[in-house]
Amino acid sequence: MNCKEIKHLITDYHDNNLDQTTKILVEEHIENCLTCTQIYQEFIHLIDIINQVQEELPDKDLELNFENILAKEKLAFKTSKSTVLKPKSKVLRSMLQVAATILLMISCYLLGNYKDNVSKAKEIATLKQEKTEMQTIATLSLMENESASKRLQAVSYAKAITKPDSKILKVLIIKMNNDKYTNVRLAAANALAKFAENTKVRQALVKALETEENANMQIELIQILVDIEEKRAIPTMKKLLQNTETPTYVKDQINSELKQII
Amino acid sequence: MENLTDEELMGLIVGGNLDMMRHLFQRYNIKIYNFCIQMTKDKDLSKDITQEVFYKVLKHRETYRQNKFSSWIYAIARNLCKDYYKISNKTKRLDDKGLKYTSEINETRSEPLANIRQLNIALNQLNDSDRELIVMGKYQGLKYHEIAEITNSTLGAVKTKMHRAMHKLKDYYFLKTKHHEL
Image (tube, rainbow over the protein chains, first blue to last red):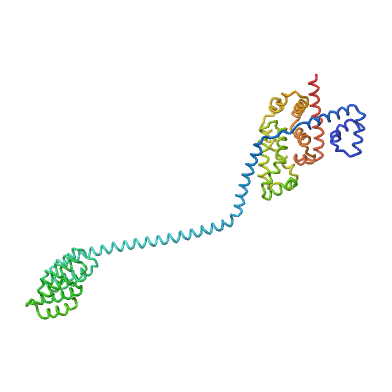
């Protein structure tokens, strides 16, 4: 073995990495070669110095920072773990979304329907109101007509109005009291009978019985007053019974009706 | 847990027991820190790199394959140090004034420490790959096959390179010494 070969093996020799035969060969060479002995001595010294190099110790915050990193990573791991479970909740979520959509659709439909109804009802109410107003106007104008039959028609119109305003009632009361024609007066009285819940109407009916001279009208009024159970009409009826001008059939009517009312 | 090998601990970590990372930290943090110091000559930077190494081990635990854990963690540290070389100024690193801790040691005049200072100067005269080999093989005590794994090289190539690097180091060291003695 020459010095060049020894040079290549010298570190392995030092590290005891050589097989027994090569080790003996290197050992023999070193013992007999001054240059190689020196090189070997230098290596021993160098490695001895390297082994003297003491490890540096990192300061404490390296470990603290590591603990922080670890804590963060553990947290991230937990979160990712829970995202693995998400598919289940995803299905649930989409189901909820579908349910919400359906609910929304239904509520929209119902809302639309309701609004439609409301607007329709409003429309109908407006139309009804308009109809009533027109009826009122027509009735009022017809009431003043020359023709008795037109006035009768007006009275029947007035009767058809479900909620007549005070104007109509006033006109009807006037017609009941003052119209030249008994038929019109009778019709007016009949129409008023329908609105008897109004106190003014009741008073007017009672008063009409006091003033009315026509026997047919009297009988009609008596009938109406008894039907609406107007007790304030009793004195007037009793007066009619005592009045000699009152026809007997009117008195008979009063007698039979009075029993019901008292 | 103390009896488990690095690889067994790593298996547990990959399985989700992240707390096992503490044991690996205890086993390796000083080694990696010192490796980085030898490679960068900067304590603060070495601390940062060491931290980054453990962060990467945790973060990329899934990519760990069945090879030796020490090789893996050194490979990570080595790559991070290399990234540092790329951005750092080489001349500055080789400048004696840049060697923070060698200058600290310089203050004391005892012989062994003077020798260590001399060693450091010699070491810094080597190129990066030679210095890396010596730091791994002689300072960190890694086996040739481990170094081969870390550097992605073969056992034979590592052996040859190591011999050459050691001779260079010796020459630098003793030349310097002779120079001082004159």
